[in-house]
Image (cartoon, rainbow, N blue to C red; front, side, top):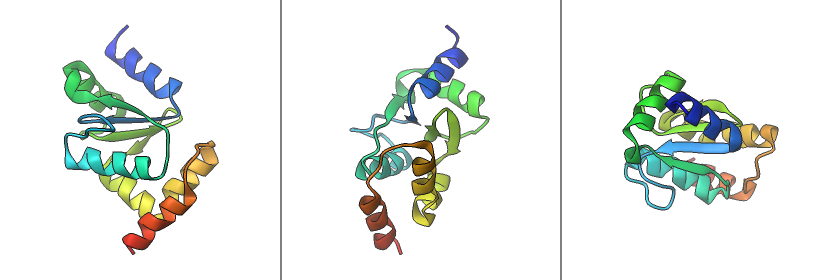
Length: 119
């Protein structure tokens, strides 16, 4: 299976996927930590792919999305964005709406607490 096929399989077989440096329990960069922290706090179940463990995946995900940076969040096979975009979507409520529209379970109260803390 090619790297592109592996990535496509990962993003289509999991509702929410975060390509990140490190893992959801042990992020290895601040940007990855921020998105994983938001998803964990909101109670979103997600697959994490540690790009540091595989150089082909690390470059392949950049080619796949045509996005130069990591982390990268995917919901239902669609690229959502990197750290800045996901942060903005969290603070505006757009991420809640995306999860609701896609049938992804999340803790609405936790999402509100994030906005209150950053308001």
